[in-house]
Length: 314
Image 1: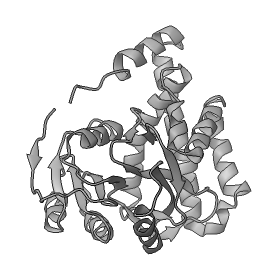
Image 2 (image 1 turned 45 degrees about the vertical axis):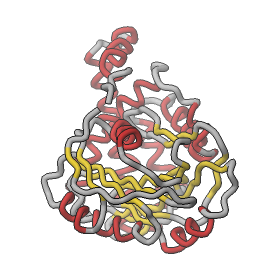
Image 3 (image 1 turned 30 degrees about the vertical axis):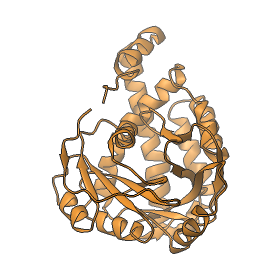
């Protein structure tokens, strides 16, 4: 376990309905002020876990009142797990939020109202995440992604996966919130494609780990019925032929789900995220399989040696 740097600490108090927000960050100076100011409206504690940003992320976060910690990045799942284990969280509830995300005004009001009257057997809340791409809300082609992001402290953990990690409850019920939060990244296409090249590497490993039976896909049932549905669809996707599945996915979203109605931004989103990114992940799956001459035993051993139980004791 290692806390590499603490920039600020506040006097903490445990109150019913209190919420701690955990924001993972790396070079997020474009977003971090917006995110912190958004959650200040309801949060009792705001923690930013930074992965050694080279821009002004830490300085901005500290100036706007967040408790800032630094910790070396391994992947999203293990960074968030580190945060849950090591941050001095005192609030009753925890909200997971990315730096480029923010809650709608309606969702903030709903959370404020619900959190103080929720039944004792409810330990998590889901909300729908909507995407804004190049300044445009992507309304068509994709279904709202309903995610468990708010959970009672001590009753939730994050799956240890390379990609597509979800919050899972250890017990209790999940309540669905009606209003959305937004994924609204302000960076350009070059940043987006570079970022998703890295995502594609993680996605390729996740696809292979699932294909070779090295991931537990049962725990997601505790993350809400929608999350479980998404995971089941992904398992079906994996069984489709390499490369063709990316093409089919693009056609499904852009044509049959009317993605073309969102104009040029909609085309770029569905082409880049629905086809290019997934084809790139398939290319990396193919590359690994070819490296081992399509020997299933050798491929599985490679995955076990490099990606199973590799977390350090933190």
